[in-house]
Image (tube, rainbow, N blue to C red; front, side, top):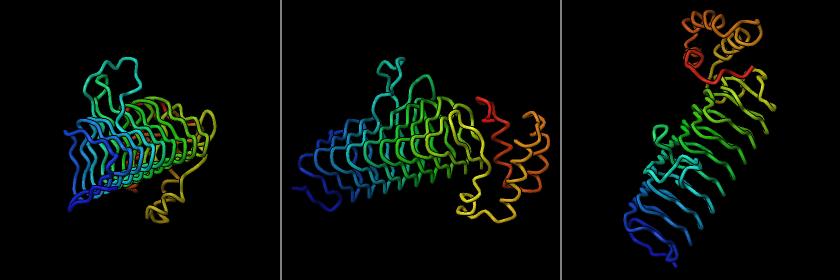
Length: 264
């Protein structure tokens, strides 16, 4: 039986800490546990047997499926019970058996998930990861700690990403990829270790990039990977190209930041 009211629909077997804050029009199914310090925004749907531990802040319109574990302690031996945070945005889909951990004080103390992400079954997102908007993580994809994933990224099934890696906007990994270095924006990678295999042109078209913009990205890819240039030399060539084609600025900015080195 559910306890129905004007703002919530909560199954009688759900366990909800008195300090948890539940928004309007939220449904929480059987045997789900909502811990202390959890905030759930309006219009969320939480399936059965879900565990959400706090501090966790979740926006509106999220859908969490059965057996997901959200906001658990970080899997880091340095963690000694400090109060850290998980922040989840709006309209995310989080499927069965997904695990998302809070941050650590060795980083910013926060793991963040943006808006409109599609996170499929058995995905793991470790402590201190920062996920952008409109990403797709296929079944079994796993992020180690401190990974940054930009907007509109697609990670194929069972992709593994090493700690501290950066995954650039509109990039794509094939199934089973082992990502040990940064993946620049727009690039498709595959293999173990992951290597570049061209431009994610289909993803760009789906995101509304014009034919001319995709061609500009292809030219930039050739500069970065086909001309035998060192990264510094490639950047010298790419900067004026970005002045002419603004879509390339995100690539120049990414390559200008310090990281783990890019896939080659």
